[in-house]
Length: 388
Image (cartoon, rainbow, N blue to C red; front, side, top):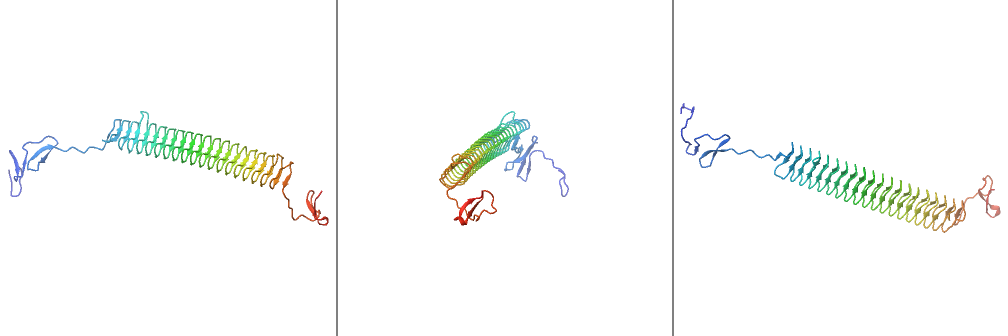
């Protein structure tokens, strides 16, 4: 060992090297990658160096695939990605981003995504499940955003959420609710429960147990309503039926619009046939073509273009006949008859029938009046006359 007054220039040791009696170094070189390690008792030896940490994301079985390690995941599809635990992606370019027990399966499946949740299954191409539980997308380009037990089996079908909803129609949609079913293409159910849409481009906004079964039929809501013909519409209420082309029931209960373009505004138990209208009330029937019942109870307008304004128990059976209101009036089939009052039965056509008629402010004398006008004569005991 050479030295100067302050520094050592080199050190050569033959045998064992000890430092201050505290450390004893090995006398031979270690293997590649080994490091010096103390036992805490003064002995230093060569030992294998600690290996690096294990990556949490590893390659899957599919070419270019990746998955979270040690959590029972399977990424066997080409370029698939799996995170979470117990998830499987066998489809090409498919991804399970989290959750547990989710599956993208099928050798021909491409581009499917499951965001998370539990026990969701995708078996078709370019499908999407956002989350939730036990949802299924088996229609191409179909989507379920969440909820549970929902199935989107139609091409381009969409379910927003809810429970046990099913969409099998192409480009059809269910927003939410439970136990709703859409089998018509381009059809929609907004929500509610146990609603069914089987017609193309039909719509049910919500409510429960409603059925829209024909092209472009619409039910806004309510319960147990049925729109079963082209362009039929029910706004709401319960147990209403719109069963002919372009029929409308606004609401109420147990109303039936059964003739083409028939309309019922509301009420209970009303019936409107071809081009007929019932405004409301109860148990009214407009069965004549273009007939009208404004309201009341138990009125029947059976003549073509016949009108009943209201009241109860009235019958307008003559064409173009009119009953303004009252009780128990009957047009008896006479055309163009008009009844004003109650308990009147018409006995001739083109006649107005009244219980009592009071005319005030008649002119005194016929001067200047047209033929057919009424006047009274004060010199004849106020007798009323017609101008000839």
